[in-house]
Image (cartoon, rainbow, N blue to C red):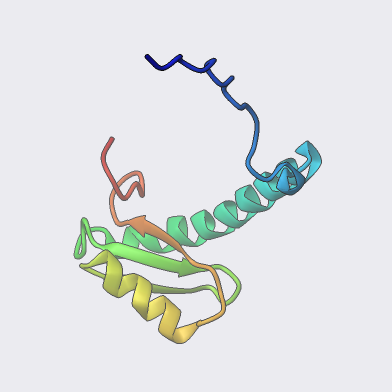
Length: 105
């Protein structure tokens, strides 16, 4: 008959603890994302009224540094248009509707 071995204790913690970001860095990144989103949202709010009636439910990709925006019925095509024109820039996607939300919960 074989004897059972003692159960190993569960290990807790991160796999790479040296890669843990300090709270200050996390807060800085969150603030940068908020500023970026506000800049994109301002462009969306400015152009939305002129396109919402003709293209309701379409997607708009906004690149805030240049102020360019790209509209298409398909979210992937709108995103690709933005990447083609500004390959190294980050863009934000909105839906042409009352709220700008792109999905459902």
